[in-house]
Length: 372
Image (tube, rainbow, N blue to C red; front, side):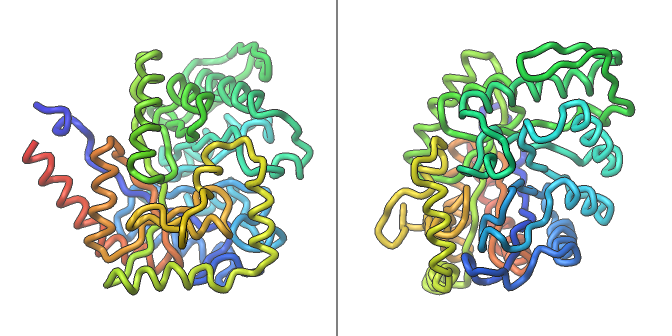
């Protein structure tokens, strides 16, 4: 059996827009505020469309519209959505350092129980520049990654070992701690992102899945070469997940028109705020997302116009369904087996992607595996 045939079946995930949603990004307020009835609609649509999981990000201020625009809190939202869904998993972002470790481990175990084992965790050691500081957290880049490593190790110990649990680290200390009931099965998987050497090293040591924001294929291939060297040093082989937006329409011209319209109405104040969050940031991934390109076109079908108005992942694949599926196939060939997708507005685009893109991509992957 070849290496391609041994790969797992691809997974397709969707996204919960905790900042708000609509056909326009970067305005002062969202066309669709992130009220729970709407977020529930997004989640239930994704479940009905057959998506595997939902990424729920974490922020301390709105990252798509004005900073003071309404924002849904991550953990409360995830818990509520788990109660109104049955099958779809939840990939919940968490930033170590803002909740005591023992309490967080209990919270995660409780959510795992409520959802009947549908919880995974996206650990975010770094984050948006000045986002930590606005809530009184002042620590450097290295410290946040060192703390995150202890955070994951201590959580795993609490979840997998009978108490009382002892853990004595630089940042976390447990003396006779318990977490009962523990998560079901193997406990939540940890997803980690980042393209710095420190981030890749942490993934190699701790991640179950390394999560990457989309970049041009050649750049992504070089990143993965570096990442796999780190994997070889640890003897581990985490899965690979790709995070990207999609702008899909019946024709390529219509897709590019929709992409441009997405940011055409952005408010200057929002653009200025997003630019200030990037200038001088130590986060290598954020710098890569916001790189300069004519008309924001990084490649024939890769566009980073959203980086003008959105924190973190600001790139999208743009095109007709066949073109988008072919682009995603190229990333699958690099080794990505999980695709975390989104589009604006999230309800309509969830249905479009599920019906027009995912079946094409699954079919292309099946044919490639059969022909390997």
